[in-house]
Length: 422
Image 1: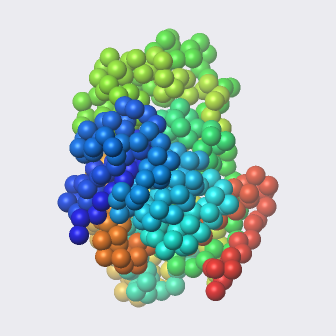
Image 2: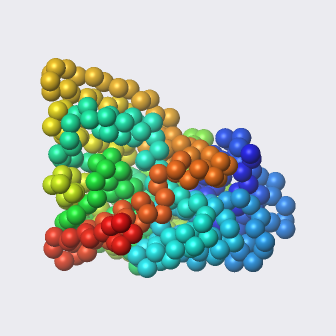
Image 3: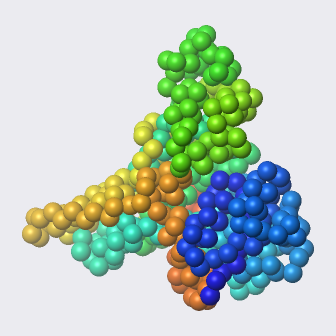
């Protein structure tokens, strides 16, 4: 069966998922909705979508009889709930970009719509789907390292990625998108629960905006990098960050494709001179954190610590799992398993596709997610998707609790909902 897809939100993520789906050979993109005429027309041209199925708004798509088997919703975070609910009511299977929604009420609405209409809802927690994660989960579930007692997990966001997406970009201001922990690291909170396999019971958190603040602006710095006399000595120079991606077939799609429709030296310079990505990182517009730790307790007393930092290279996550019979060190590329009984080490190389960035599909994670989703739609077997409505909203609740803990200094208890407690 060839799955037909509609795309709501033809930006970087929506276009990337559409391309992966088409490349798999088991899906056809048949409709697109996006308010930006350049984006929607470009995607329509790329996939030969007829004009009658090219919409300026998702409401126009929802007003039509169902045009596809499934829809990929990749709108901004705060614009997820309404299209997801309306299109679920139309009978579409849903692939929803994370986070589900900025608030619990909106996320609950989405889950209720999917359940009410008995449609597949998959949330894009892509980390679950990689061969690396699947192999790690198999080892943990086999009992090879005994019971997990504690976990250390690091997300190295990357210095330039933080500047691009969370200082200059669309996730820079919490009120306009969501918290950093929800926008970026809901992946990690979800993944930890998936690997550990126990419900979280308590959480605390600390962090804040340490560096990207007006008081750290270098003396003499200008508002825009293209006009700045100290730009050449600034680590976060937009000119320095973006010019190196010109000519790179992957990075010209992201991040450069986010800056400008005309990816060229001239187009880039124009974007840096007039657009948000050319402004000084110390301008003060942003307010999301640039570092955060989350401490988690799971059922049975298992503990985990999660660290998100901007001040690193953009790389795969790093994880250390400590069990009663052994331990595992993982870096997204390989797993190093230490067996305590034999005191031996096994190294398992997983060889991910590409690097950890969105430009390279998160090391193949995006492709694995799309494969699972398309297979679930084609066969009707929803179990092929492990990031369904209940799993996803449960991990989102941990994020909201962690943010409450960070703002109040409290240790927050996480109580199961009536559905989770059954």
